[in-house]
Image 1: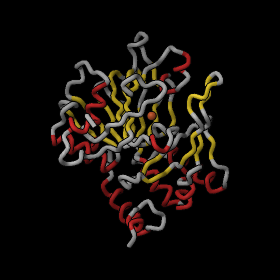
Image 2: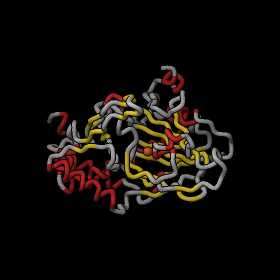
Image 3: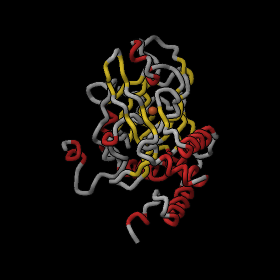
Amino acid sequence: MTQTDNNPFDLDAVQAYGAWRERKLANYPVSLDELVVPVENPRALTDVERAAILQACGRANMAVYTLAHSGEAMDKTLLAGLGAQFGLRDLDCHLYTDDDGISALQVSAQRRQYEYIPYSNHAISWHTDGYYNPPQHRVLGMVLHCVRPAAQGGENRLLDHEIAYIRLRDENPRHIAALMQADVMTIPANVEEGIEIRPLQSGPVFSVDAQSGKLHMRYTARTRSIDWKQDADTQAAVRALEAVLAEDLPQSFRHRLAAGQGVICNNVLHTRSAFEDDAPAGQGRLMYRARFYQRVGPLRPGKSIIERNNK
Ligand SMILES: [Fe+2]
């Protein structure tokens, strides 16, 4: 038996896929409540809290933590402190992250920033984060923390990307083959006032992370500023994926994060509904977001959190 025979994401490994699929669906939570973990101090989790978050991520690639003391002043370093306890150490820095690599998402009055939907109050369709990143900067892990919810709206839908994979592979393995092509999805270069601020980026939708052997997904349901490969298999696969996401799948969860709640996940598929603030500018919905190049996982034995942070 070769190594690929054991990887369920190899299309030839029919048995390994069958066994993995069965285990995955049998362990999948019935509701998001099963993935909620109360946390006393996010900077120093107890063994029980850490194990519960890891278990939730093992089942559905995501956990929702609820801080016991949401009223206390929260600063963005909380996200890095929490992530470090799961091996999340390399932050993705992009155009609008602050110097610490963590974004404060709120409605921005600055026009240039407002044009990016996350900084508006518009709905955001299904996507994974960092889908325009180059392969060496794949966003494998993410933390989204709610400091203040909106007065109305701002709900997230969350879907484990492995469930989307299962639905597509069960429907037709050719969909998976098409979506694993290295040039299936291309994001054109981002050019502002004649200056290229991000180069064209091509890559697969589904790929397997070499280090962990786990599935990674790169996707946006946006139809503007995205070029899909034009072959018939790709077109059919993209339509099939859109249809899966348009269904109200029982495995897809809806949740409106409350103040002091957050999602820690392996960059699962998600949406955001439109929202309305009724507070003055700068006092409305505020989310902190950190994107990492690692997956949520246990720390390697023998290394303390401090050693890992200092790496
Ligand atoms: Fe996102």
